[in-house]
Amino acid sequence: MSQPPRHFLDLWKLEGSDLRAILEDAKRRKAARLGWPKGRPDEDAPGEGRTLAMIFEKNSTRTRFSFDAAMRQLGGDVIISNAVDMQLGRGEPIEDTARVLSRMVDAVMLRSNFHQDAERLAMSSTVPVINGLSDKSHPCQIMADLLTIEEHRGPVAGKTLAYVGDGNNVCASFIHAAPKLGFRLNIACPAVYHPDLQDLARAAQEQGQVFASDDPREAVRGADVVITDTWVSMGDTDHDERLDALEPYQVDEQLMDLARNDAVFLHCLPAHRGEEVTDEVIDGPQSLIWDEAENRLHAQKSILAWCFGAI
Ligand code: CP
Ligand code: NVA
Image (cartoon, rainbow, N blue to C red; front, side, top):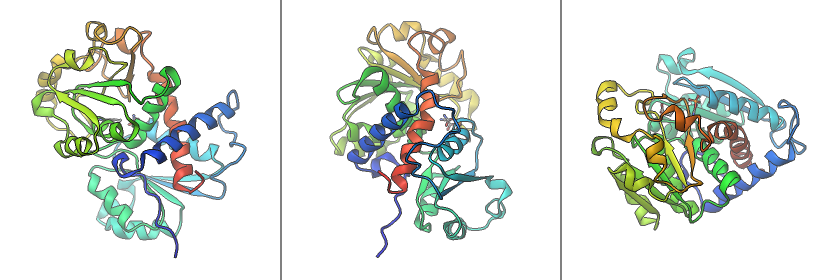
């Protein structure tokens, strides 16, 4: 009997050992091609002969370009479409889309408005499905973030990460990763934009060191990494209310001063300078945002390799 496809939908669904293997593979691949032209395939080309379909229900720069570049570097190919251009955009069931694409490509990446649609796509797909961001989570981003932290500060296990701002999809994937990889996660969000309670409960059940409050100073004190994200995510409609409620959660130099002296700053981008973070912090010496953005490519190559069974 054939093996079920290796979906990459949410970090909480995966084994910590698989996440670790993906991170180590990403480090190896990145080091092995240092200085190479960006379009040259890796020596082992584990994506050779494989095609990734990408479907976008929302805008994207990093996810779109990094997955495309990733497949080229793995020796494979991509087919990209916005959902509105597909019959999916006219109401064709996502299950039928899954069955058709499974006959034509080797994996599907979906950026979806509703997380449930990624789950439904995976349920009817016979090839791996990758969550390239939903309203509930952003697992590929967090793999790139963890890779960036480890490159600059060593193993994440035992480190303290502080997430400040909106308890959104990015925050959720950090919660999912904490028990798997053994880091402490301090979260500070206003009560009205708190993290998902089911995510917090699961992390507690898995003995994760995840602590949520509404106090940004408490969260950041002594942290190794300070992270924030936009206050208004794609699909959010309460723009003004969000800006008001989140104002006390801006990451500025005073807040960074409460973290360790060698603390680093991360933001998945796109950023809104002057809202969730000041220019001084995001463009300052502690910021790793450009390495973080580049690492979307390296982390996703290894996510794809894992989906293809090459790790
Ligand atoms: N960080 C991130 O996912 O960026 P894009 O929305 O540009 O893909
Ligand atoms: N939380 C943001 C992340 C964008 C990459 C959003 O969902 O819009």
